[in-house]
Length: 178
Image (tube, rainbow, N blue to C red; front, side):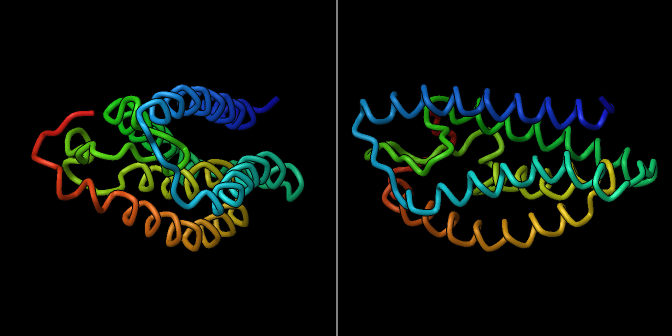
């Protein structure tokens, strides 16, 4: 098994850890009256992210892609930075972080952590990872394909999330915590 395959398998394991956190947080939110918004795009998002990880494993092998150090090492750094940003988002949102758009009515927006700087920092992590992880081992078709499809999906997802969070915007105050 190549070091790159190990990296991708570690990212897959990280995804399962995210799903466990999301499952726990979903229960927390639903117990407090949380409502899901835009669930129709969720299966597409799951399929796209699974395809990214599969492409990362298959393309370098099937197309005999080399590891190019001038591309691979910076891409690895960006991949690790994306993971750090993602977990900063997860820890900042606490039980309010989900893989779905699940909003508890009456809670103000979180404006601490990375949300102090960006409205949707987790999606920055997704975009960076979607480009960088495949490029660690020159899987440029996977990087390009995922990035184009993800841009379309994020257009829908961010619009959905913004609409769902609109009532909370009026409740938010600087430094609000989950």
